[in-house]
Amino acid sequence: MKIFNTLTRKKDEFTPINEGKVGIYVCGPTVYDYIHIGNARPMIVFDTLRRYFEYKGYEVNYVSNFTDVDDKIIKKAIAEGVESTVISERFIEECKKDMASLNVKEATTHPKATEEIDDMIAMVQTLIEKDYAYEVNGTVYFRTRKFSDYGKLSKKNLDDLRGGNRELLVSGQDEKEDTLDFVLWKPKKEGEPSWPSPWGEGRPGWHLECSVMSKKYIGDVIDIHAGGEDLIFPHHENEIAQSEAANDKEFARYWMHNGFLKIDNEKMSKSLGNFFTVREIGDKYDLQVIRFFMLSAHYRSPLNFSAELVESSKNGLDRIKTAAARIEEAVSAGVEGDMTATETENVLAIDAFVKKYEDAMEDDLNTADAISVVFELVKLVNTSIVAGESTKAYAEKAYDTLKLLCDILGINVKEEAVLLDEEIENLIQERQDARKAKNFARADEIRNLLTEKGIILEDTREGVRWKRA
Ligand code: AMP
Ligand code: ZN
Image 1 (cartoon, protein in one colour):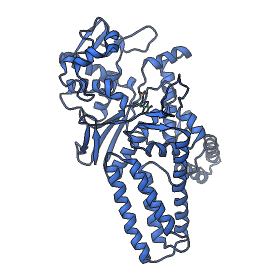
Image 2 (spheres, protein in one colour):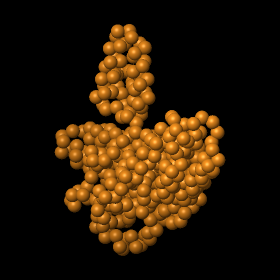
Image 3 (tube, rainbow, N blue to C red):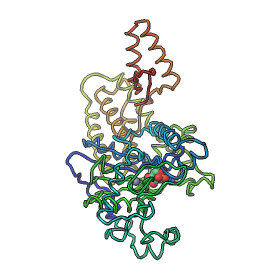
Image 4 (cartoon, rainbow, N blue to C red):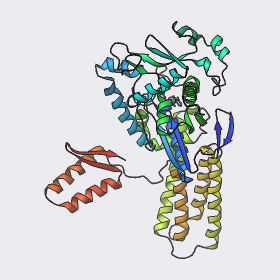
């Protein structure tokens, strides 16, 4: 597979560090509010990358963090008069619900920054020992100039940065040795969450979190590091500096960055009033449509979100689902026995579509072209399948292929009846009652029904808890 690598600025052939395995780290959201639809883009795109690797037989270790200590979280906690963790835990849960609605698989690990503080302190200590970092009044800074490769990802030159980046210069505290030095550990301010460290009570810098969590859950060298293009500088550049200075190894072999989502051709911003959360959009559209819409463009291109474009994605997705429903009917009513000569020929065409789809995905995850192939397949099946006339074997081949190609994109061709929270709770109650009445058969039946719908039950001392798989 070819991947456009931000590090080399070209499409590089992907070769994993360990055969058959791939470690992917995707920078996750800061959890102070509901995620917005821009945040959904990297989630959907890199979940699709993961699904494609899994389709190819790779074992994928997909790690995506939650930044759960941050100025914005603290600000909101103060405003609500609660602990920061109340805010971060609330929005982690909400974010997980949105991800499930977008059919984004749970990461192999979803580390939280606040649970990895010891390792962060250890990395800062290593950097100080190696002279890559220094402490002043409880703040630890990274000595940027000492890392000779600084700027290799963003292609920025240190002297240009120093002269040209006024923002860095004016915000540079006097105590820093150099205005380019960035914070690894910051001292506690009144009312902020903090942890003890060799440099006093404080909390980690944002860049440090990802360097530490990717090392812990994937390793010193990761196959693919991904995120939105706004993260290239300074976030990812700083992650590289910290990790490579600490580990003496290349940090990530492939860097993938998604383009930005705009609304009606403008930057999404609260002040412009064109800012939408996934939750709000979910009230208007099925989030499957949003997923399909996001994948209709190449991930590196800017993507414009407008009612018209979403409507056209909705029509496209409906066309696919209608075709799937028709084929399903043809499977049920399928003629037993061998395929006809025409059907056998069509199977060759179907296999060629699979190959074409794979070629598109292998070309830097070109989901836009892959979706065009799905439409070609839909066209063929629409014209070649008639319920009651087509053979079962042919209809099954068509259905399986359509489902497979959509599954890789995280699109369900078949509407699964989703249980509402209330329905789940009623069923759980019914199961409890059945158990009390020693009607274990019914109790098991309900548990199985819930499992089929992706609801996991956990019997705890406080009663039954449930979650969506
Ligand atoms: P944040 O919570 O701001 O750190 O963002 C989480 C992820 O969403 C990062 O990978 C960002 O690059 C990405 N992101 C934020 N806004 C947008 C947008 N408008 N379009 C695409 N990606 C975005
Ligand atoms: Zn990160």
